[in-house]
Length: 175
Image (cartoon, rainbow, N blue to C red; front, side, top):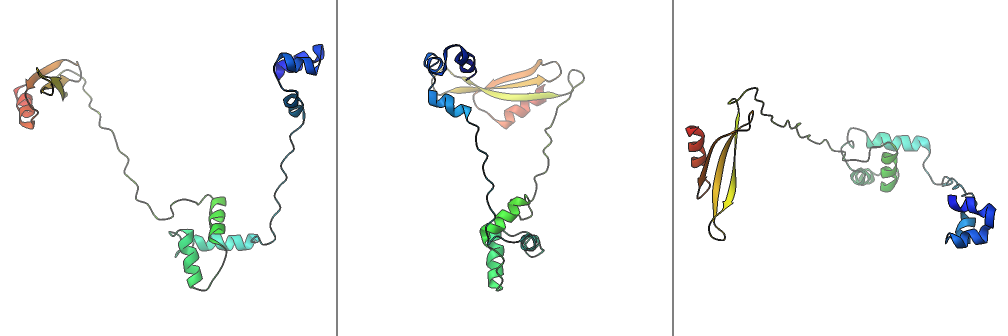
């Protein structure tokens, strides 16, 4: 539309829109200011502010603090009390940013990633295994490698026909 605004004073709206392949209706629509949406009127049956505060206080009270609005609604009806609909309870909780799991949740402890730190060679070794293809399809050998994490040198290695914890222990003991 910027190019169109520069071209219109020179050749006119019709020619400028034709050259730039812009619909004249799009140009004129862009010239109109967009109307601001009218605020929605408050319904006549809406709860008063005091009633909304009472509903929120009830939802946050000791017996209902860990229950979903559906459970609170059902319990209040059993007791013969109607405050508002279940959906209104959700709206009131949403206004106060309380729409979430209301039960106490157990938190996972913060996981600390283990770090291996070496300041000189032969302080910390790491080991790994990998599969090497064998002479026939579907057959594999297992390669065990011991690495010094400071120097990244291979401290020891071994190739076996199958993976075994005993073989790994023998390699570690041998190095």
